[in-house]
Length: 587
Image (cartoon, rainbow, N blue to C red; front, side, top):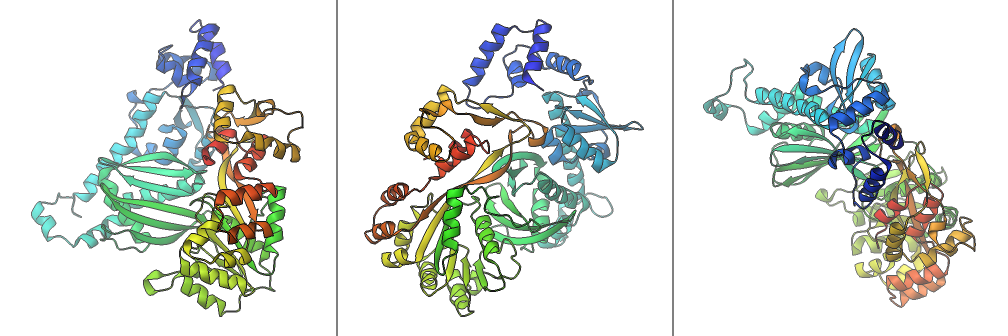
């Protein structure tokens, strides 16, 4: 609900005055992670949750419902799957001839209502609920599933409970786990987790056992969100089901395992990579979702600004040499490399890759997956690829001296080589190769350019609003970044004038939060980049074993725009926010 609209209604009913609102806003702005305005009013005991709901209901023209007074049938509750109920704060509690009754904390969330209407085929009647009532409704999922699973795992096919003697005579643990994995409730839970991760455009699913429950979280736009809590009793069955799907050893609980499987849903093809590790409270499972039906994008779509785009295009068109992409896990390195390969993929060239694992299929490219169990490492695979007459080679990651030397020799002998390294910035990649054991003259003569990147969330276009930076934000930025370097770059980009003295004179943007972005203010992600070209000067510095800081200073003199500076360019253009730049570019 619009904050000003709510404040106006509260003032009209004499529940609060303008002076108190200003005082509360000041207190709230000083909190590191402030709650919503409505929750803050209840926390400060300005009014009770019941009174707040009554005011909101009158404004929105919807009735209030308290689910604690309702008997909710299990089949009706399950019409809205638990991940959707948690994430969008909605519970289905009754079904009549008139349609499905939904209790929502935000009755104006049209996107969720439309989705549920489409999925159930029922008309939607909306009711308003508070947080206490919502928590009660969400707990119903937990308790009903717990009863179902407890009954399932403690009963024989005839329905009688198993005695300890019966259990001793029963089948082996592996057979028992397999049987559990094939039970309908378990299949339903796992299918629901996967279906709604795809719906929410999640990149990863984390299934984390706790002492008395199992927490499920989705990584959406790079940030983890809790989506559901499962009863502890279902933990073994869930893990077993995922192991069956990904062809892992069901009875191995002490060692990490990796597997994969595919899902074909509503015309979308997803490849899912599964990783399990033993932790104190059981086995933790992480599932990475890769959309195989995603269309190839261009470098512009990935967020490359003109200067960086020109630098990349210059270097990928060279007849030989190496381009390295650096950044932490999940920073979009693979997507960038696949995009570059797609650009270069014509019938006149032979593209060969060696990866761990193969994430996306490239039509016409020869993609090999490493398999250390049988001795197929990056270095051995690369040696074999060089006998296959390739023009362009992509190595998933340079991890050791052997792979690095093979990659450098491939670049020296007339091949174009692409690979990734785990370093924090572009300049650090060159000393990193020295640390691995590559000779400096080989690095200087083969590396054409190094690209470093991070992913930042993009501002939701439906609720984007202009803002000016306040004093607190400016003080934080001054401590964290060399802002005196930034203004000349903004002037060159046409985003500031020579008269601009400070960033607080410029307009920035922030998402206010709406239905389309689940009230986060963000929707989607884009890259921020820095491209270090190995010029003759930089090559000389590599030969002299100069530090990454010295190399970076020289590259800046030659016109390199740093990642955080690229981020500020995007923030002023309204693509992302200053908060995101601070989050991913901590120096």
